[in-house]
Amino acid sequence: MPIEPNKFLKSLNRRQLLKLGLAGMSVAGTALVVQQLKHSSAMSTVQIPPIPDGTPTYGNGINPMQICREFDYGTLKQENGRTIREFQITAQTTTLQLNEAISYVTWNYNGRVPGPTLRAREGDRVRVVFLNKGGHAHTMHFHGIHPAEVDGIKPVQNDTAFIYEFDAVPYGVHLYHCHIAPVTRHISKGLHGMFIIDPKAGRAPADEMVLVMQGYDVNEENKNELYAFNGLPNYYKQNPIPIYQNQLVRLYVLNLIEFDPVVTFHLHANFFKLFPTGMTLSPTMTTDVVTMGTAERHILEFAYPYPGKFMFHPHQDAIAEAGCMGRFDVIPSPSVLRS
Ligand SMILES: [Cu+2]
Image 1 (cartoon, protein in one colour):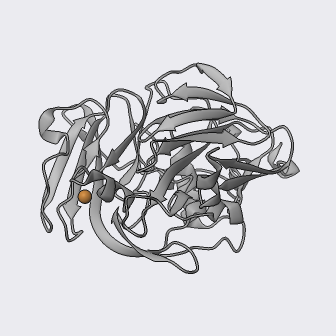
Image 2 (tube, protein in one colour; image 1 turned 60 degrees about the vertical axis):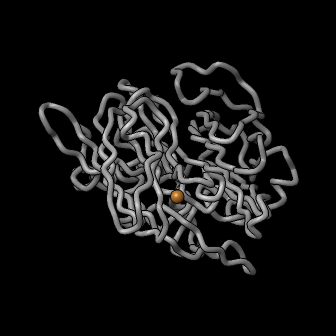
């Protein structure tokens, strides 16, 4: 059974916290990092840079710098010898400030776009308690293998609830989204998120991160005017994500851009190993650009040998210029962390 974050934290002394890169971080930030690390077998080898001071939060409290490394492992229960992961999801309607000029009414899960990154281990039983407070009929349709009655196409009316329960198979990077017609509208207004199923044996320790690509059809003309990684246009362009030089980064990348049939994901000044749909334990290719249709998702692994700021973006450059643009800030590991 995985270690609960708070118990695990209390068991660490200051030196161990320093090795994890956690000393000096807020309790909330620390808990997130430990949640992220608790599946890895050699946690102390991964260092996570602290969130830079002054990193802004916009809109309805979404902080992309925080949610890129945030994973929801649910509440663990044991029933009949099986591990159950129970997740609580509420559909809501909230306004999000997309930039200085545009505020936009989103339909979302748990008040954020994208919804929480749900994470389970292969073979767990997943139970999602879905409450619809969104004001419209919505659903949760998961990608994966499950019975028809929990496929998430039957409308859940406003002010009602539904429980989706199924086995977490197969391992990989998956997703969930609302499946009420027009699905383009329900997804692009924000009802989507990532669903990661870890392989039983886990993966090598890495600085793990989620990037969900999304388009905003602000004018409701079935065409996107703005694009974003993790909800807010240009956020990571203005606030580069700090990563450590020479440390393995594992990106979970999902394309949920409606109305544009395909985008690529391109990484500057580097190459990445590609694990298609996260369904392999060995990479199938090494490249610096991967083409992704809507709902396609992959694991990308890389490390940066040189410090500095490096862009990532779709190479449909009009889409990048309309907000789907970010940067990594590659920084040397502080010497205190090397011991
Ligand atoms: Cu919906």
